[in-house]
Image (cartoon, rainbow, N blue to C red):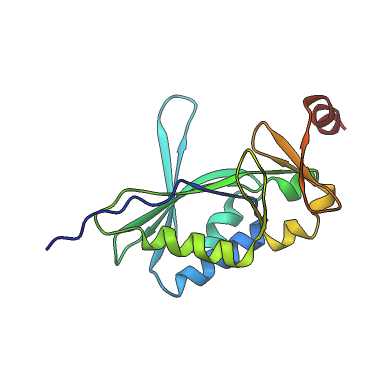
Length: 178
């Protein structure tokens, strides 16, 4: 009997410092033969792709920037799609949301599920009533009271009681202008 494809949960949203993300990807390398494929749209409508052998090569190629990458397991032919916002260290005030998505694949979603499991195991979870749980990596969590967390609108801060508090447009515009 042929295995039927199981649709994974919706995309996993998280906030992570580059170092914390690199550690998870490094651990996945012990289980999988991974390549990192970045496809960048250029100004003239063409695309350029770059293939990296390791997570640190990929992340250090353009540190602290928003990046999109396909993480490919060559042996099992599984893909993980990551939208990474590494801008926190650059500005120190804002942390942008990153996302992981499974790509429908007849070979399964184990790579995606393992990535999400490792992130949930390490990251702190803060519940937010309207936007679901907020997962924050250890390095960012240590600075959680001084960072604005951006879902690209809305924006949140974490108060002294570790509750997500909405930051209104005037406040984050003022902070970003500084």
